[in-house]
Length: 107
Picture 1 (cartoon, rainbow, N blue to C red):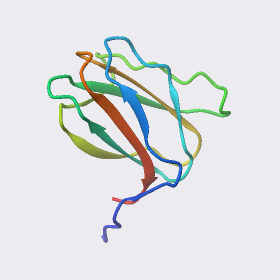
Picture 2: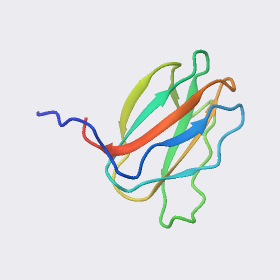
Picture 3: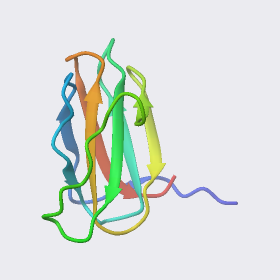
Picture 4: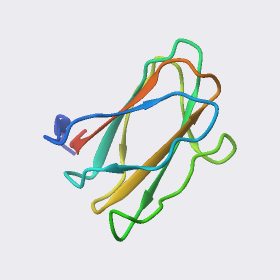
């Protein structure tokens, strides 16, 4: 198995402020099947949910702290989310820092 370096899309990074209330689902560019996530908080764990949608105007889903994927403070991870239109929502354990979401492709 060969690893391919992560290549960010030209569409840029989405910044979601960490908050105690779930963010409105944000559209992720359909530029690849992966996303890189970075939680800039020193204390807050961010939780995310990514949902495939049919059209840009579809609602997506809201993140919650019980069933969403956690991103620890200061962590950067990459996830395979598949091709197609997607929306991401986040919620955090404190209103501290931001969650940076960069679409792209590769490991």
